[in-house]
Image (tube, rainbow, N blue to C red; front, side, top):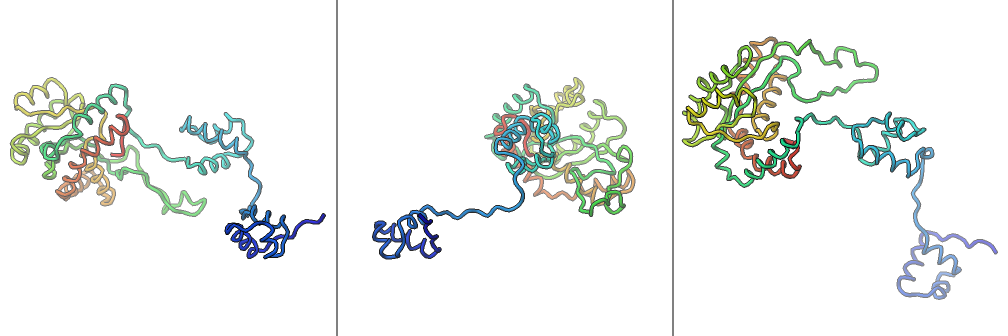
Length: 331
């Protein structure tokens, strides 16, 4: 018995339409003049995707094993995956399979090491402050120290687009010098109402120099610019929490904000330091004095709106900490 002939696309369309209208096989056969087998084939027919290229080197089971191991140990490289699973395919194929399941290699974010007690304190802080009204955040004076270096101050990875085998040509290389060149250590503060003074720290920052900064730089500004009732924020650096510093705050009747350790993502002043580092990268100062001048100018140029937006982000920062169960957030 010979094979039934194949339908054309128009015939398949007509057969499906007639069957959908409730026609029987015999009625369709009379209308079109085809066999029952042809009608059956037309109803079963599906467009097959065209396959090109060489045969896939991994099986679905191998693909699942590769993805499972990568999810279990996300820091494991393709070479180690190949060894552990005893695969015969190349590391390029392994990386390709991982990309297919949305697991490409990415640079991990550098975040502070958070121990259990840190996570608990961060969660406690976020839960206690998540419902704070915005006006309450407006009464906080945010402070911190930061080191700004002459080279490498941009603060994030830089990329270059170049032809192959040209990595050492001057136009494609990033110039560095040992230890980053000149650097300056800074203390700064800001609030909802704008940036406060920025101070260049000379020598080693210890508890004595910190108290001098509080006495001579911070306090005059706060008494002049901050609301009548304001709160001082600082991290848990040893010089901040020393007995001398605590006694100074008590003597001057300054209210301190309880701050969770290892929480730079909760302090909005970190975003201002990032702005300063980007400005330094763009200005390209040549020495420490030019670096300090660039910092002063860029700090003074920070608009009030930028400060207000950062302070108003505190609710979202608390939400993010709770959402990530106390671990580091995007802020």
